[in-house]
Amino acid sequence: MADTARHEIGPDPSLLLVDDDEPFLRRLAKAMEKRGFSVETAGSVAAGRAIATARPPAYAVVDLRLEDGNGLDVVEMLREKRPDSRIVVLTGYGAIATAVAAVKIGATDYLSKPADATDVTNALLAGSDELPPPPENPMSADRVRWEHIQRVYELCDRNVSETARRLNMHRRTLQRILAKRSPR
Image (cartoon, rainbow, N blue to C red; front, side, top):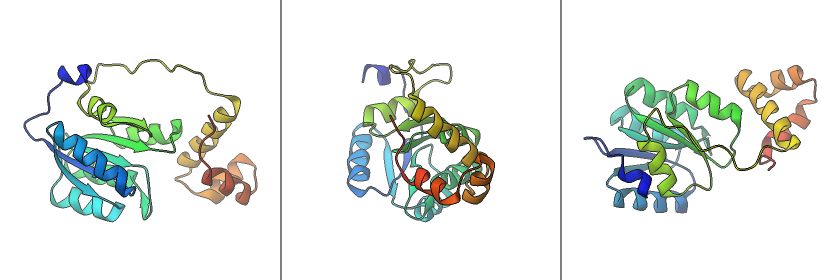
């Protein structure tokens, strides 16, 4: 919490939280309200896009994988409606490729779950000149392979057949890899 003391919430404290994990969403909303944000929640891409269109917030935390689609669609809508908003993409499926894609379309930061309210607040309020700390542990060979597959998948606009062709692997094998969580 010491890091957040240096940074203040701007004049507009509106915060949109988009996540399909209802218990996590409720806990994070309550914690962010205690930190001074005016929180609005959405449990789907459709609900997140609707709020982003009607009342674009100054801050947003968007889960990457939602039941009805990809959270990057909400990030794109937010960036279109309110270019100055600070957006953090939060996901349990952390990958370099998706982080790069999120930042390219306008996310301010990218956090892997489990992230607590302090991590989220620090990411939302961090200055653009602050660098994140270096990683404690380097990636394993399995993780590097998984990251490469994710990168090609994002470059192919999340098209499984095209990604499988470019990686010279069977489409079903690729689908199984993509369905799993990332290796450590």
